[in-house]
Amino acid sequence: MTLKLIRVTTVAISMNIIMRGQLSFMSQHFETIGVTTYDPKHFSECQKREQIRMHKIEMVRTISFLKDIKALWKLYRFFMTENPDIVHSHTPKAGLLSMVAAWLARVPIRLHTVAGMPLTEAKGLRKRILSFTEKLTYACSNLIYPNSYGLLQIIKENEFCRVNKLKVIANGGSNGVDTEYFRKDYAGNPFAAKQKIRDELGIESSAVVFSFIGRIASEKGIAELVTAFRRLRDKTSVGIKLILIGPFEETYGVLDKSDKEIIISDTDIMALGRFDDVRPYLLASDVYTFPSYREGFPNSVLEAGAMSLPCIVTDINGCNEIIEDEVNGLVVPVKDEGSLYQAMARLMKSAEEREYFSKNSRTVIEQKFRNEVVWQGILNEYEGLLSK
Image (cartoon, rainbow, N blue to C red):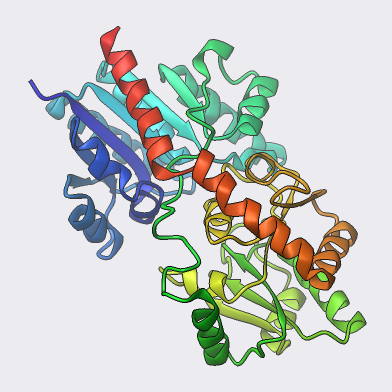
């Protein structure tokens, strides 16, 4: 009899991106079903690429009592109908609703991956509500998989669940990175391809280019990054550019109006929007910068490392597990514009250091964070739990 696995995310874009390739891999061992909110692009794209059955249940990221109760009921009914052996959730709202529903439906193996914790930056009532929902999610789960050791420590410190419920799979991460897709020679000769994309963007070949990929939001350290970049630009005769790839946040962590106006008006800052394929912009870069305040296990840092870029990251969980200070990049304190400026200035001035970190970057990713390493670790977990 084929065993049945259901994977759940709040929205389809998360499933499409977080579990790229992993669902297809798991379908070789289980009847695999994806459950998420429908959207015409990501839901269909995920279904087609991964070749699995998809089921739509509307869930919302924000707190909405009526919508949440409706989604909980639909999840419960679906689990009762499908009778899965394993339900494994990602993202906070999907974790809460699917773990409660799976517990009510008596699903034997209930697993939740923690890939970030918004409550670390929350305050007051919102923080108390988020703490309660974390505890409820964990109480209904058999095991909790923080996707970094830093997150595991935060969960321990907050006493959200028993320590024996916690485990980091492989070396961390939710999906790893496709090192055959993310490589600097993906388009042939990397030097020619780099110059081609720079020509298209109007960036001179001699410029030192810093880049960032993610939501253009305050909690991503964008204000500090923009301030450090402009300070560096104004103090050097070397041509430098900053490429920002991602959408401006419009809900949580919205940038101050003045910061957004600076980004839009400064001709040396290129806010290009969101792209499905970020490789050209990483290839055009010399240094990847990621000064976030909090993360689970940042995919963009994995991707930049796989593309052999030296990285400057903040000393937070996930980032400081991918980047080892002075080995494949530099680690700076959180919310410290001065330290970020110094790190950017150092790598701007030294092509030799950039080359040294670059050589180490891909090696670290290949050894510890390839897709296959993470996938096999998750499969081993499933098989071990089922054997019990």
